[in-house]
Structure formats: structure tokens, C-alpha cells
Length: 168
Image (cartoon, rainbow, N blue to C red; front, side, top):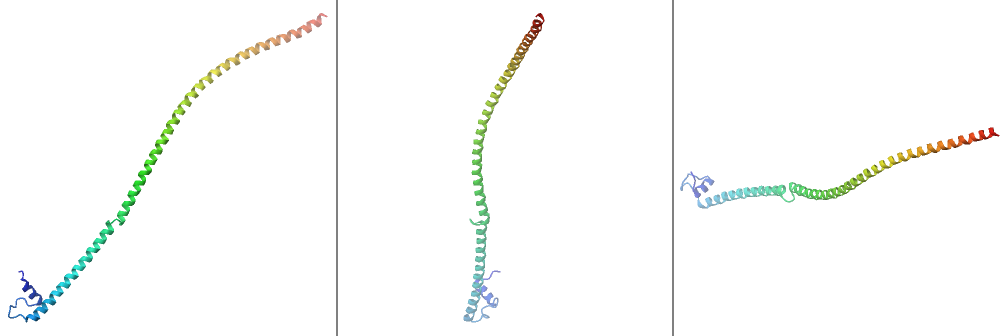
């Protein structure tokens, strides 16, 4: 059963259940009660200080773990910074790739034009080679005819000398 405050104080002094007649003098009772209460207060203050120290330690641990300068938050900030740099680098690379693609497209059109030009020149070269073959064939025929004429003239010249010498 719950004790009344005066009974609790008496119990703290070891006088519970004795009644009024068994109680010591009021002065001694009061001194013992005050001493007992002082012990209780000291105990409460000690417990409060211990609880406050524990709360401060937990608060410091939370600040260390979750505060702005904690290792996880530093890592998060460093990671965000790296992501921002990587994003910037990616944008730079994308713009460089666009410039390179534009240059490639320009080269592609120039290459296509050069290929068309090469095809046209190759066709012209084929025509020129064909004309050269015909020209070479005509020249060979002409040279052959000329050679025949020269050979005939020399033969006639040699036979005239022999025929003319025999007529004398």
C-alpha cells in the first residue's frame, strides 16, 4: 500500500509502523529526516548529472554522426561535388561530340563529293585509254604502211642499181 508523505519519511528513518508514542523527539526526527532527504537529493542530483552526461554524450555522438562535419555528411558533400563535376564534364563531352559529329558530317559530304569526282575521272580515264588504244592501233597501222613503203622504195632503189649496172 502507498504510504503518506509523513509515513514515507518515517519509513526512511526506520520508524515505520511504531505509531506516535514510539517516535523519537521532533528535533532528532527533523535532523534525521533532513539528512535522509539530503541523501535523496544528492542521489537525485547524481542521477540527474549522470543522465545529463549521457544525454550530452548522445547529443555529441549524434552531431558527430549526423552533423555537417560528420564523416557521412562529408562523404555525401564530396559525392555531390563529384556528381556536379561529372555532370559538367559530361556536358563538355557532349558538346565536343556534337562538334566532332558536325566535322564528321562535313568530311562525309566532302568524301562523297570526292568519290563522285573519282568515279567521273575513272570513267574519263577509261575513255582516254580506249582512245589511246585506238590511236596506238592507227599509229601502228600507219607505221606499218610507212615501213612497207620505205622497204619497197629501198628494194626498188637497190634493184635499179643492179638493173642499171647490168644495162651498161
